[in-house]
Image (cartoon, rainbow, N blue to C red; front, side, top):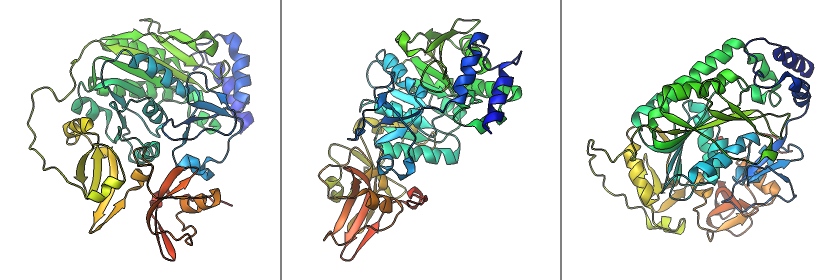
Length: 464
């Protein structure tokens, strides 16, 4: 496969039209070939809200304070810390979103709402969540049901109540949430040529026709969702493609069809990121090339919106909602989370919202399909409560709750949804923890332990 893959790269470099490498000088082609013969770097990004630090002094990713390169790729599925949400496995170049977000966030006043429109599986969403002040809200959207489920799982692992997940078509987002978001990231579906060395088989799907189809889809996604961005809001457009048709040409199309101003993002020259400019409107973009830096192919550009409304959605006159009767949860929940929360009963599950976020939930709950919002606490059954898995992984869970520290072998058994040792004299609900981080709930009783890890979360790999 490798030689066929390399031969295909060489053939694509010689294309006279629609060459994805048309934006670079042909003198760099030997470096392009050399880079695609190398193994891709493995990198992770730490969750700043969960107390975990790598045991080794790994090399840092220059443009992201939480990013680290690993010397080799371990079996992440068999690492309990991964399941606890201590880190996310993310390609290093895509972590540049952190640098972009930090720069444009400084220009925004007050709490902001951020939309990650094409968010699955959740790499950039968990990255944005790491940078989010408690008053801000991140809304991550994915239209495909299966991918949206994976997105929910990754956001649950990250553990924040101000990260929500929607499953809607971009057109529905644009129509239903007009003038809502201060920052909108569109990591658009693309041909993926920048990730070929991570997935060599993907090169077989590349064609000139596929590039054209992706470019049209990218335009449609932007056009359908653009109305959701507020005046003076920031549109961040990204692909993992080298093709100018999917990158600079889309930037030209954006500036031609919408009232926007391209935004220049400063960064140190030693990062070796390549600035590029669209041909018609000189919109500035940024290319990550594997033969110039330690990461895969990425393109990103930023625009500031001039039109639209300057006020958040919901302040304009509209149909008045009937007031809902406040839900009063069982006092037993007070032992699980601290602070002031607004509680809501939704499909027999109890959710907690920071009070300043609940108004936004009320505004959108009947407009779009919500997969995750606030913090799912669990269910009430008679005199008992059944805490949710989401609560176990939440950073809002009280630290003084009963917990059972597991060895790595016990943690992997727990993650396979098997019982762990029951001769500990325990009774009632405890979090099963590994290196101080909860993995889920267990209910201990004389002679046995019930493992409440959700079935679809269990490890199916042989743990040896």
